[in-house]
Image (cartoon, rainbow, N blue to C red; front, side, top):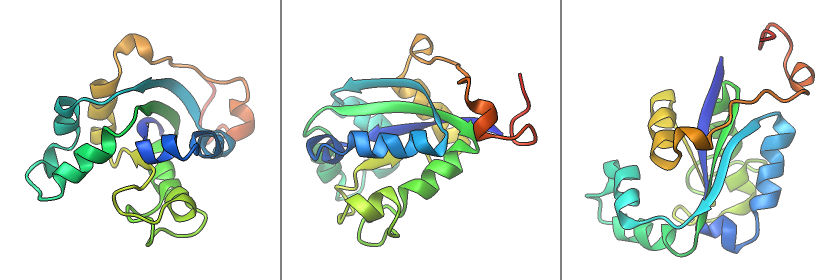
Length: 157
């Protein structure tokens, strides 16, 4: 099923100049960028995004980390994009992430773990709405799509 998912290149990716290397992995996999921008995250927005963690003792660390520099937020589209991106991202703790995954190759921390990726279709929908207005998302189908998916994966529009 064709899905969209949200990615956040965290300050640890921005400051370590890893965005290009990571972005190329998503493009090489065949995922389509449908929205992308750089922004400075506010505490209010982070409290919404991490609402499930606000009461945890480590939440101040999240705030400090995520406001250390601007981030890049991006929407990717593809067949089963959410699970594909989660697999590519790897375990949250970079020390435990498998080699070959983004975190496995670039992170050694649980907190400074390079990237955020939506965990479910419901989360992806809410997160995309949180970070993008409808006019910032472009529903596009690249001309190379037939060379990425067969018709059984993604029927022609």
